[in-house]
Image (cartoon, rainbow, N blue to C red; front, side, top):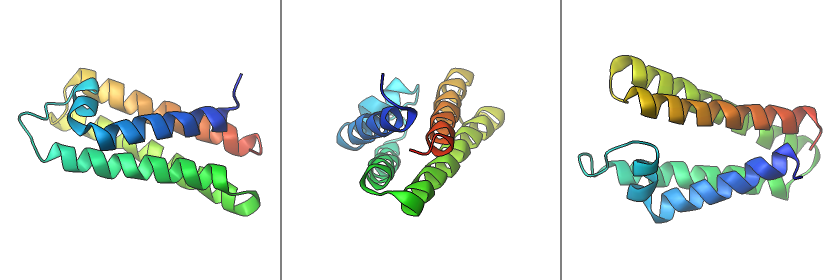
Length: 120
């Protein structure tokens, strides 16, 4: 079974590369409507490259640099979760999308905490 950090990094690369390569498909998978908002593809690509960069940083470093990588990832993921909650509250995201996106962010933050605490 992979460690939390290895799992998180693999998921980051898969989701991030997918969001960058096929932003409309990725948006639809999260319950967004890229047809109604064509600019969403640009934002999906920003998210995608960020996730690949975070995974690469975490896997390519050791010691204090790796701790920093996990900490930055935890912050990004937790704030992604908060952004989903805010989007659900103000109606810019459907409840389904807010729960899916928010849950994904908070689960990723939890995996990052597990990697950090586990000394990965």
